[in-house]
Length: 304
Image 1 (cartoon, helix red, strand yellow):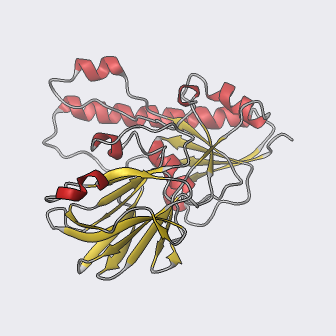
Image 2 (cartoon, one colour):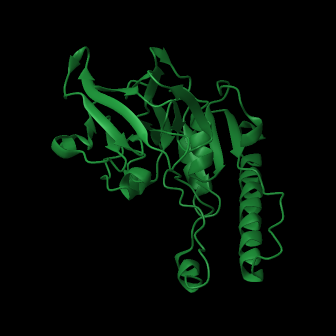
């Protein structure tokens, strides 16, 4: 059955002016980024006007309630906009990301000695200006099917958090210069699969397959097949791990859970970046697994 109801979720346009001391060439670059994004929004809306669908456009900052009354969500922005949409979605509605301002390799090389001209990565975005209508039509007609991406379920002291992570979870002291103390082990059901590991470090990161090419990879982890149901964990900058160094980085299988006990006075759980976070304290127990509902995402063909 063809999809009929669609939500267009938009990354907002910047309303602030750059500081006066910024080089004019950088200002021109930033203004061009705004124009390209604005043009992408207008382009998407013009395409949707031609389709036999009901649709509405909403700025992502204006949406805080669960998305449950549409057949498809289209995000216009980058991976951040898609991630934000995913935090409000269950496993029933698919999401299609349009990268509104893709990085231009020639531009990056041209300005590499002057400033960083990187635009949007859009790793999970299947569409751009060039192919949006084609991908949209294929999705609406059921010819392009979404992939089911694993998300993490997080609980603190036995209570599930309401947000599922599509990329990664970071547990750390709120001050990056402060020590993070915690202990953890891997469990399958009630049976331990690893010894209890006591850590002094910069924190603990747990990523999904979708997030394994982001911060996890930058920190020395490995990319995982996008449809893997396993999780990857890494202790950040461990202090003198010694005999337990082999347990500083590894996999959490789909039927396993990593259980950590926080032993600092302050701590924060960051979900998919810094915008969504939960405060923890000394003695709290955090459990992370891949038991969360999946997110249905129309993926770029090169990821499949």
